[in-house]
Length: 82
Image: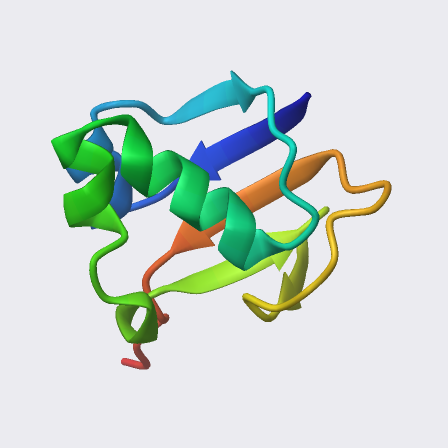
């Protein structure tokens, strides 16, 4: 089980701030594919990965990163300066 967190518009599209996900995925991209296949709201939230960032156990990572030993995956849009 992996704790998956959603922030900003990702959370708005999915309708949840976080959830525990049982997965067979070995990479972030495989996890995304599993989530996309769940429901339309997930497919919409993950339709454009270039508009998303991911953090594994609070460290910024890539979508091809391995999930071995990861307890938390967070998805969020890129931060803008101001």
